[in-house]
Amino acid sequence: MPEDRKVKKIYIGHPGGRRLRGRPRKRCLDDLRKMKIKRWRMHASDVWADIVREALQGM
Image (cartoon, rainbow, N blue to C red):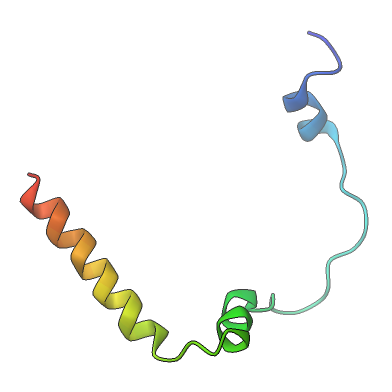
């Protein structure tokens, strides 16, 4: 197989650098705060309920 295949480069490659210790940051929550979005959990549950309702009607 050719050495320049993307899959092989990804498999063999090493990104380098070091990860920070501890728990990863919650970047999405930081973004919501920056955009001053409040009550995002309630909005997300409403959207998810709509998705489930549509899926059940399609069955």
